[in-house]
Image (cartoon, one colour):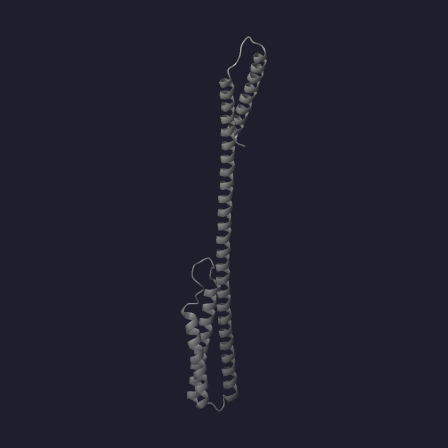
Length: 197
């Protein structure tokens, strides 16, 4: 509540009451010929009352407009803050989804490595008696490459799992993910080559 406007309104009412008393006194005085109040005094007093009331109304309107303007600015700032928060939440959700996709890809890669390694072990177990020494060496090199691929996939998964979505860039599995893929290809190739011996 603005007390300045309230005091102005009370002041205007007091002035209006005084003017009404003077007007009543002057109308009773005009009925008695003792003392007459000039018409210019009444008009001047009415002008003062009207000017004061005008100032009070203008001040009240200005205060209402200022209050509305401040409220609109506050609402605009609140809406802008909500929009910024929604944008940030969307960016974080997109980063989280990218990290989930990368983890899924790395888990699939690790699963393929495990299947390839188990298949090569089963192949060696079935052909152990008939496999030559070079075939066993190539198969062993293939196993080492496959196990290295598995280790690189797990390292990349750990790195992506430690990803924090608040950062500006997306999840990065690092060079371990690329190394895991190339080691998988090389390990499977060496295992296939061992069949030729």
